[in-house]
Amino acid sequence: MLKKTFSKKALFLTLLFFTMALSAQSILQDITVSLNSEGELCSADVFVPVPTFNDNDGNEGSTAFSFDGINNYGKGPKGVVPVTGEYTVSVWAKQAGDLGQFRNIFAQGRNLYLGQSNTGTIRVGDSWGNTGVEYPDDNKWHHFAVVRKTDDTHLYIDGVLMASKGAKIPSPGPNAKYPSNFMIGSQWFAGEYFDGNIDEIQVWNYAQSKSLIAGYMNMRLLGNELGLVAYYDFEDNEGSSTITDIANGNDATILNADIISGWIASEQPISNINIRNDFNNTFDASGTYPVGTMVITWSFDDGNRNVITAKQNVIVEDNIDPTVNLNGAATITLNQNETFTETAAAADNCSATLVTARTVDTAKARSYVITYDVEDASGNKGHK
Image 1: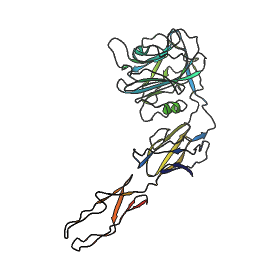
Image 2: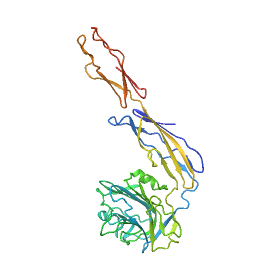
Image 3: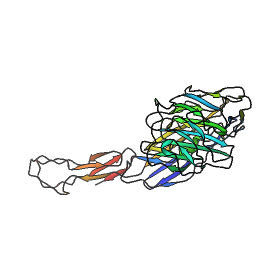
Image 4: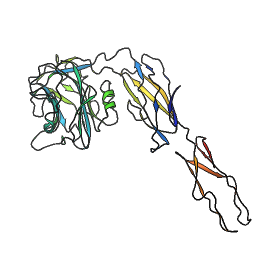
């Protein structure tokens, strides 16, 4: 058991792990967090590290498609990327040719495309034609993510925020003048072709945080993740003219390409293991936990029917004593037979029960000393 100390609460985390061909290992660390006294003190915002794991095959067998930069590309249905609200689109790509030409990794209409300009800078749609970020020219794999929020648009490379527009880009929805098919390795009009390898396109219907982007970019998805709109895992292999969307069937057709030599071995994602927990159905169990014990079940799936689970206890202890607040003066004077009204109330960060140790009989003229005791659900006590 690992104890995490708070200023007024204590958090305990325990990870139990099992051994199979795939095994989980704890990477939990001691941390100290000060709770905000103005916040909801009956709960705690807890950072939960993602457990590590061992697997015997890494990403063995993973494939990608190599686009020639001349005329081949993938064409999917219209409106794959949500046309309203927030979204996240991410992809692994490895540029083969030189910079200085218009090339695109993916596109959906004129309002959403990701690629480079003839000056070598990254573009994200017509409204963000110059992000100010240079496209990597090292001929290595890089992960790109475009996040559209209600009030901003972000560009991430390899899990790092590189640029923000300061406003949301326009909707990538249908337009009478411009097609809105989801294009892979091409601009929206079938041109500005990508020269290099593409793998692992994920489309989500919400704006992902930096931590989610950084985690999902190295992980094989199962296709049923919450909020996942499309997942092109590029595992169709030699001879296939289809890039399958295993999440919702928004398959793309490969055009003008050699579907034998085009499929190549890929280094992405780094791991074939999918990790998720039952707290929020993602790989990141950090969040707000109530006072008490919550048991998180982690699952590790390597895609080969090897699945293990690991249970983790998140315990938030309430060590804050409740108090007694008098609603009036500490000393009050009543006339004989006048009704006495209770003048105290319990106060606690969660809830507490007030117990009065003595009653007042106003028919009998005398002095009374009333003792108030208070106790909350965690056994913390107060007295006045």
